[in-house]
Image (cartoon, rainbow, N blue to C red):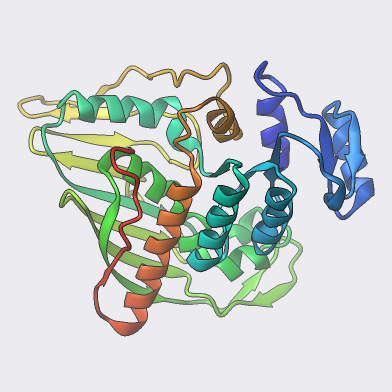
Amino acid sequence: MVAEEYAQTLRSSRAINLVTCADIDVARARAFARRYSIPRVVSPGQLDADVVIVLTPPEHHADVARSAIEAGMSVYLEKPLARTASEAESLLALADRRGVLIGAAPDTFLAPPIQAAAEAITAGLIGEPIAATAALLSPGPERWHPRPEPIYDLGPLLDMGPYYLTALIHLLGPIATVHGAICGSRPRRTRPSGAEFTTTTATHVEALLETAAGVSITLTTSFDTQATTRPHLEIYGTDGTLVLPDPNFHEGTVRIRRQGENDWSALTPKMPGFEVVGRGMGVLDLINGPRRASGETALHLLHVIEAVQRTSVSNSGSAVPAIWRAGQR
């Protein structure tokens, strides 16, 4: 499903050519290649390109990326970069040794809404940021996905959390400390086909995060919530508040209300410097710079997510490893 969106975005760009399509199911690869005028179809082991875009199920991300990196190709992966932080660290180390680039989704923070919010914060329009809230509240992916079990294997924090966390890190800086609480309900779920399945993953996760600059963040990711009026993202400053759209998407309106104002106003969208907007912008960011959708960012996300999971079990706070590149935002 996500490969369709990548192909639509990237074939509209003059900065990149789609030259090869690979899948373990060659027939599906051929059908996909025909739809998007991709000239060559190969098995995954025969890939030969400047950049390999890895859109496999998450459990295969690291293996596919490792093979491409060892063959001297740069890689861009859908989120998560890997299933564990240690696995991601080994990928980054391998890419460094081989002298190739590694980037990872999400790239929605590169799109106009979050770039407009970043510009507003930098300009001091809400004063000094002091706190933020983020919420992915959903009854679960079985509403729309024909085979949702792999998404439940990840859980809402690892599946959807990266969109929210990446936006917050881009806007407010890296996360330094973490507290978490998890629970699960409705272990028996129903596919759109009517077939039932069972999940043992924690399906409701609450986290209290603190950035290196001391900004407090409350994050909720849930596959147990039937309805909500809570905004996806709000950022509170000493002089005003920003309300952001769903960071899972590349569009939407950012609203601002400053001290002394009686109503909300919309920020002017900030164009991101790319000729196209959509899933795949991170690939263009990787090849043309400034490489903000980086492997380091994706690794930091995994450290944060694992810290939330650890503290949820141990009921104690956890520090996040300080691997952030100085000056990166």
